[in-house]
Image (cartoon, rainbow, N blue to C red; front, side):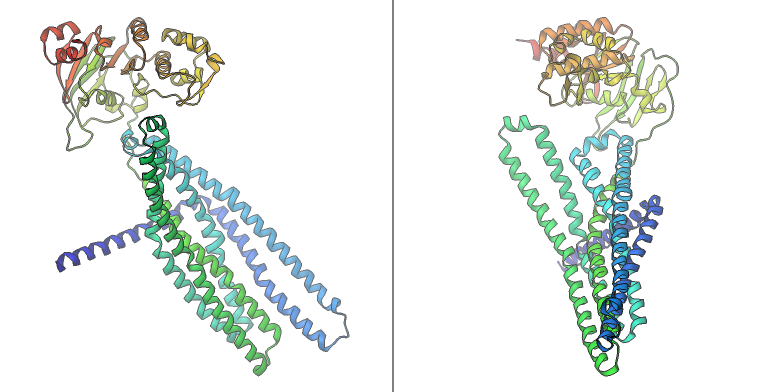
Length: 601
């Protein structure tokens, strides 16, 4: 029992060490990411030095004013205004300069550095997502990706403020004040300088305690965004099944955990500042007591003591800045870690090969194996030979691998063995974008973006004229209902638009595929959301317009593929039967059973 407990403690210690090392590496990488902004950061640092110069000049001027005022009380040959006005004017000018430079520095950080960094990194993430395999988006909730791109990148951009405006200026100000204190009076400088490192060490220790809580806080934030996105994307289904109470309960539980982690992380970060204030108060008291003794016993000028006291009080500002910065830097590092994890994901291998010559549409699938998970084989030794212009139907029960074949043809996923050839060219040697230019797709799940009807239809062919768009819509039997919309083809619609029904959306996606005019066409349950009459019209339009084009049709409703040139029957990732509709019925095999199950009545 004790051995097991010791092993568990060792494992926990190793995990904590590894996590701390990872966060340290994240911090170093974050600094490297700021390298392109180095010129702007140097300019900000220079402006910080000016602000610091103004800040340290104020106590000297105030001390000098006190000395002049004290001297005037003993020698009133000169007027009070004549004695004090020149230095008050200088002091006023220093305050104006300090305020102006501080404003300029903040403006530079907010509008040039932070925004540039934030926008630039979001662009990098967008580019990265474009290069990631489809499998990543299939496995990752969209809400989590959005949270990383928005919230986490915003927190990363805050790091510039903490590095330049808080940490850098704070440490510089502390250093300058410490040097001036020793030159002013080394005896009063000693307690201040001795207590300052103690406060910095305490703040660093406190900040480290919040690491794991900030990390968990951001991960829970991603889960919350994913849950909200999922619930509201499928809002009608949620309402229909009365799932609001369960979703609300789940959201409340997750939100409570998120809140508790946030409160604890913020507590550990914010407690640093009171510790700094307490230590700084001790230094202030020590200087005040020592200064009074030096005035009485050693004849030190009152102005000198006042100057040191002002510097001691002024030292609290950079200490509090550093405390706040060190506390928040764990927040930034946790956010940066999530962003870097996304940036470091392996990208899909994409060759730069091109399609040679005109595509006729012959597709050969030879001994192909594929599985989404290595331990669960799906496609095994698949062989298909499709002639140019043929209409190939792929049928089978759910999970047989029908849509997987489409994923392999489009290179959304890469097969583990075998070859897929288009007109004799291995698609693994051709760039993915070139392969996808050969296919038009109509999926069971329709997708429309926010834009006009014409823009949605022309999504795959943006250079199409209005006449070509209308012709494609007419062939897809959707021109009649489009013209009844408020602005016709210029009516703005979207995925959640109620202006068009689900069946009409499907017709629009079919028109989109027709307009694209690609040599190969994939229809994945393309007619599942239309009525029987429209389905028959679409089938006739497809037969008329797809002469000379190769078409893959995935269907559960076998009535839609009766006239196919070849029907492939899949079962457990293998082709168990193939032939025409009539020949497969005559075999009285698995296809016959499927057909009878749908139409026996």
